[in-house]
Image (cartoon, rainbow, N blue to C red):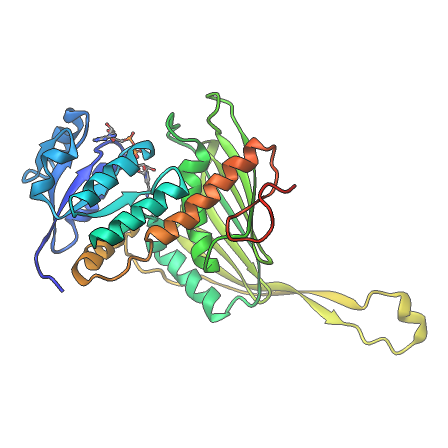
Length: 350
Ligand SMILES: NC(=O)c1ccc[n+]([C@@H]2O[C@H](COP(=O)([O-])OP(=O)(O)OC[C@H]3O[C@@H](n4cnc5c(N)ncnc54)[C@H](O)[C@@H]3O)[C@@H](O)[C@H]2O)c1
């Protein structure tokens, strides 16, 4: 375990980079040592908040002065920038999506393993106290048998030109549901719609199947209201996680199947089960005040110091990016159900 401070270079000082730099700088034992952006003025502007940091227009100019690199550039450049950092023996935290193909995620993972450095994906919501609380309830069996998960991530948001709404938003929904379900889904189906730019979906619905559990995901950057809400429906309880309100509501509610004992032969034609509504209390657990982005930076530093495996490493990134690839393939095939590699059925079955 090393006690040396971790000196970070941030590559990409656009919209998200400054937020990561602020979060990283608040973690004890971490210093923001370099700010890198192709557009030098963006790095210079951010230097006002981090006066001790070097400014550069490419990562190679500052590699000698840092121990680790945070990649917050446009997703299309992630593989190249992360690869350069790993080749120089630096630990890397790459914003979501780790790369634009699962093959690139795998290759980066192999390079990081060979170099003995930490490779972490910025699956920020895994550090949300609400997501962690619900994970604990699911794994403890508090919700009973999980039936389905429903997720909506909508806003009138930043419309990207480099990736569509699926690749921009769904890494969040998918990383959370994969975490809750303990792995990748077996099948993915996706319908997506383009209104503003040709070839770049603004709106999408995705159906993921984790064995018998369905995850229904709806995303859009072309919606009047900001909605980030996930519902987990189990046989015992139902949970609603509202990330905008920062609340988790646990509903002790459900519909139970009650066997009807029919003693008269005449009743044989009636249904065997009666459905009984159960409406109990609603609890609102207190959530820890931890900021997910700060917790993510802190976890990265801890993995660097201790050599621990990150909660979101190459494997988790492959499992997220495989779903995004399958969603794109499904959308291009008119919404066909796509099996993920690893499942036994042939790809692209309706
Ligand atoms: N975890 C989250 O919640 C979250 C939220 C928003 C964005 N992000 C991710 O952060 C990343 C950046 O998103 P953004 O919205 O800030 O994009 P952005 O376009 O605003 O900024 C990207 C910056 O990277 C710079 N850049 C690109 N390639 C470079 C290179 N090779 N070397 C140096 N600089 C380079 C660009 O000049 C630009 O300033 C994306 O991967 C995005 O998905 C994550």
